[in-house]
Image (cartoon, rainbow, N blue to C red; front, side, top):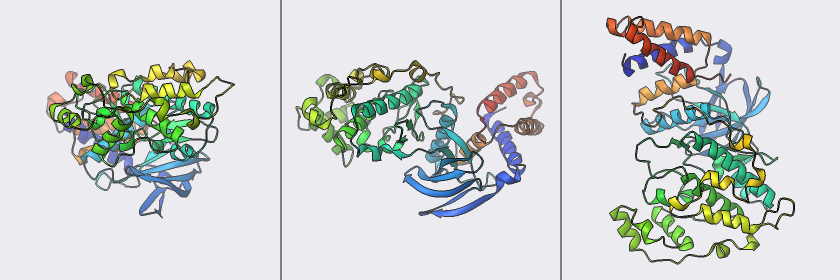
Length: 430
């Protein structure tokens, strides 16, 4: 049974499941939110826009079933092309498998469309937080709050890295907080599983938070996220963006003007054309971290936890290292004196998420095929779903040769494996 055959079986599942969905759950209403129209389940009331970006628009709402406030994100044209469709699938898969207090929780996912042919909108329902880090950056924080926010960022990142997931788009707008200083990481549309054997794409992370290895097209490892955290910490201390580049070239110039031109050993790692360009740029000595981040920028030293400006500055100096091979790892950062005062094994060493789709990043499909994969991820796990899966698979296989029939011994193994994968990909969100 080929993947194409299995996709056809999944289509049958989706169509039948959609037609038999509980009528109450199929009741939607629409309202305009800025330049977009939200069509949501009636359980979600009092929608208010709270944010927007390249990947979608977010509203707050009240969930009448859960009796709590939630955030609803409408993905921006998820099926306009293969890249967007794959990004939507990646976000769905990763949000469903991660489970950590410092990563935003997915509560529900739905679409108002009634068939695969009409399927064009994806809505993610998540926990609602009070603000994103953009607003917090403007505040004067003491060392306890600054350190605790960083600790939580690192806990969330470690949870992702433990499963081989690199976030790739860490920035203040993708980090949300509550008034009690709890923090969660969100937006996994650009996240990627590490060690896929593929060339990592350079167009990731909002420009200001891009690591040098991304800017220079070198490929990257998990500590690409640590550079982004360093940029965020610097912004929280300075109350302004550390490297506000206008484009790739200006971004690199901003980095070397402040941190200095890297060593010849680093330059030799670049491909020839990039190395030629970098070597022809003016050389900069850079500034010491004491000059870049003087004591006056930091809050007063903490008597309670013995947190000091010198410790925060030392952490910055280990995160903002141009050569990724010499940059601190997330585990090392969690052990740093400025961070480890909060260390809790239950938070730091939480079991890593298990990614059900082992081909998450290698997959290449048409937009219509990505629709099927996304639709399957959105369906709830139920006894009815299981039964119609077998019915759809059996019905489809009757049109195949004997060798692909589900009762054939060799094919049965395939069906069992596929069915296990099918089940693993479902979680109940209602």
